[in-house]
Amino acid sequence: MPFVSDDPTWWPAISFYREFSYFQAASLIVVVYDWGAY
Image (cartoon, rainbow, N blue to C red; front, side):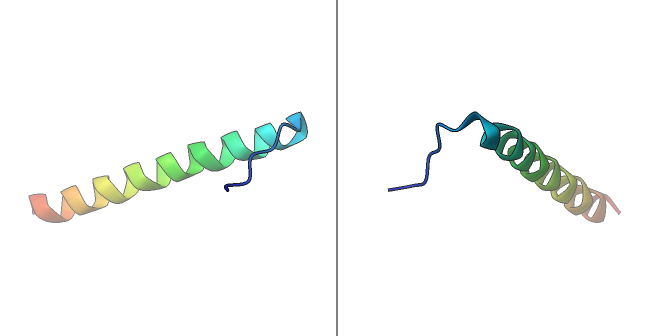
């Protein structure tokens, strides 16, 4: 069972981690696309 916390103090950290992981994935896609373009 995955860890799911109802404690609101964890929400900012979780949302920050999700936003950072999305940004990281987008950056990786852009880098790979740039390598493929040249």
